[in-house]
Amino acid sequence: MHSKLKSSTLDQHIEETCRRVRAEFERSGEVHPGFECVTDAEIFHVPAHWPDPSAKGAACAALRDSFRRRGVNRYLFAGECWVGKTPGLRPADDPDRGESVQVLAVERNGLRRYAFAEIMRNEGTATLGPWQVNGDGNIPQSWLLELLEDGHSDRPVKAEPAPVGKLSTSDLQDLMDQHPEHAADFRDSVEIHTQLGDLIADQMQKGANGDAMAIFMTLDSVLYSIVNEMGSPKSLGQFAHFLRDHLDKFPMFPTVPNQVPSTQHLRSCKDTLQRFSCEKREAGHTHFAIFQAFMNMYMCVGSQAIGALSLADRIEDWDRDDRSKEIWQVENWSEDEWAEQVLAELVFSKAMNVQYFPECNKLCGSVAGYRVRRAPNGLVLVPLDNDEDIFVAVKVEKIKGEACIEGWLRGSEGKLSQFYQENCWVIPPEALHDMEELPGKEALKAMPPFQELTSEDCP
Image 1 (cartoon, one colour):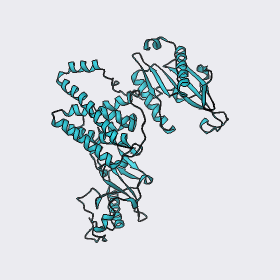
Image 2: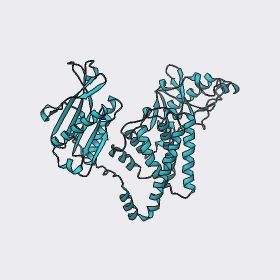
Image 3: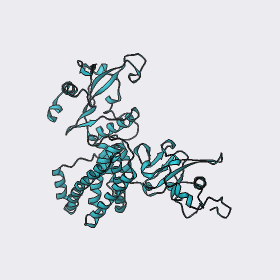
Image 4: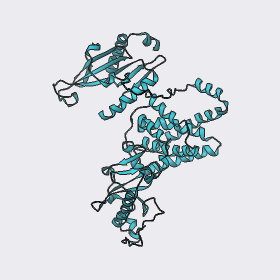
């Protein structure tokens, strides 16, 4: 098939694609959007899935980089689209819009083709009209046609590592022959990965909603511990590159519902995988073998839970020091931020009517067992924050002399993909739980009541 497509003209290729697309539509009544990419060495298919229009920019940049690095010479895109019929209105805003299937074909430094066929619906039955094919001079503008263009820049081209290729069974055997000192680690890694997959499948059966996110968060925590013990392996960046290069294997964006896992299920998963990791170390397996097994599973699960693009960014963050820093180190607090933090703790203790005296040598922001945190623009969590701790957000406005307790959540509930920004999570007030629902609030009545600070109590 590859040799046939490689030798075919662009017109022949789009004709064959239109035939296959029609057959798919007649069989299922829909066309799953995606790219068929041709290089000198391979053909690969990339699903075209983006959750909303704002994600198209990230998809465009990621696809362009992947196609460049993998040497794509030609690609075709097929998918359904809306067709506007009212002048001045975008198709998405046009109540009289129609539907069609489109096929775009692009050749590097060469021709372009565009084909479309109207979708006709009648009493629940969908049929596809005849194809209309346009050449270079009559093709609508679209970013989908610009993925082989590198753009113009007067800056020198930045050197980048070569694409990280996939390993076949024979490639793995060759690698073990070339590096016999690591052969046992490679074999152990494959075995551990298989056992880990079985363990995760068992956990998925036990759980309910939020399974994928619970497994991902657990893998993230356990793998981070392994990475810390190893001293941050130099190969971490290669895994991020592999995710971005192979969008045919790893979805760009989440493919599972973004549901918050229950605390009980999250704790069960974490205990199980931590115990599994410890057992492998006690059995004599190396950190390298365990790391490889967990990382490969992490990429598969993580790309489904948060998408390959976000996951690649996350893995690259592990090469930085931020993951082992407290919130005040990440945000580089000055005296003003520290003053806000102390005031936040006092406001919470007064609202809960519990005694609390700030201590200079106790910087965790813990008040009666709750992690109280200043939240000027949302509650910020960092990787070092415990998934099971309860965090309380307090917005302090020193100029107005006001403070407001905005709500609470557990660390695991805040460390979700939609809140992730630059190696931290920023949770808006509307995503927090109401303080009336604060767990353990009744037990605070047994604690000594709040007392106003005197000058001797101030740190």
